[in-house]
Each structure stands twice: as C-alpha cells, then as structure tokens.
Length: 164
Image (cartoon, rainbow, N blue to C red; front, side):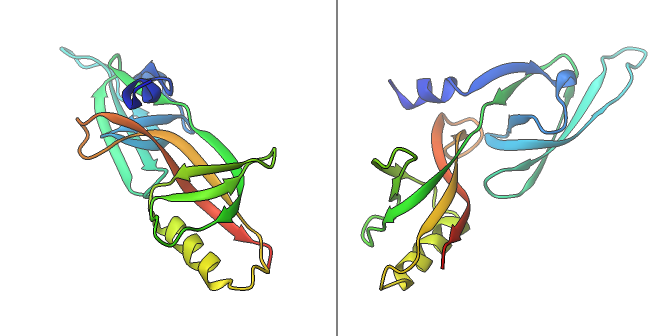
C-alpha cells in the first residue's frame, strides 16, 4: 500500500459549516484541532461563510480558513497511543524503538520535533538505564512540504515522561 493510500484511510469529507470545536481537520496540509467555528449569515448575493480557527497538533501554530459553508474540508482521524521507549540509536535520527502494550518491540519513524529531541536527549543522558521513558505518540496524515504536496502518515511525539 502506498503512503498516499495509507493517508487516505485517515481522511473523511465534512462540510465546513458542520465542523465543531474539537474536530480534527487538515488546514494547509497541517493536522489541526478546531478551536472555533464562526458562521456568517448569507448575504444578498452569496453563501454563508465559515471561519475555522484551529491549532496544529504538531507545531502549535494557529491556522485559519475562511470558506463557503457548503465547501468540503478533510476531517482527519487521529490515533493516540502510549509507548515505552526501548532503545535510542544515536546514528538513526528519524526512528526510535518502542515497546507496545503487548511488550513487542516496534521501530517507529517519528517526526523530529522538540518533544522528540528532548526525549532522545534525556534517554542518552540516562547512562545507567535507571529510568523508564514513555511517550504519547500521535499517528496522523500530514502534507510533506507545501500544502499541495502528497499526504503521508507521520508519527509525532506529543508528550513524554520519565519514571525517575
């Protein structure tokens, strides 16, 4: 299955006027959580407008989209799971080894954001392996490059904690 087809499994169409606070949508290729939807009344010659304000779940940047209320947006499904960090390979910057709930080891390619850098650094500083590190990882579609580029499914660390 191609990356584009895998990303399509996370998408479903929704009209802009039907969005509610807390929904997840793609705005300019970024996976965002809707924080506000304002609907304007129809004008003499036009359609109702929807102003959608949302915050990217990866970068925290606010995005806004103004469109006709009947226009279709891409609603996304976000999968969130907790994993225990098993191993950090210092040479491999994109992937980390995690243990899932069943205890089996899985290598996940994670987006290198601030949380991933902090987790990698904390694990490398723990030279005596006295701490257990766990991370909350979100699996979501995201445009790689500009908003018109192909969608890819990414794993993003949104939070992590240490048992120390």
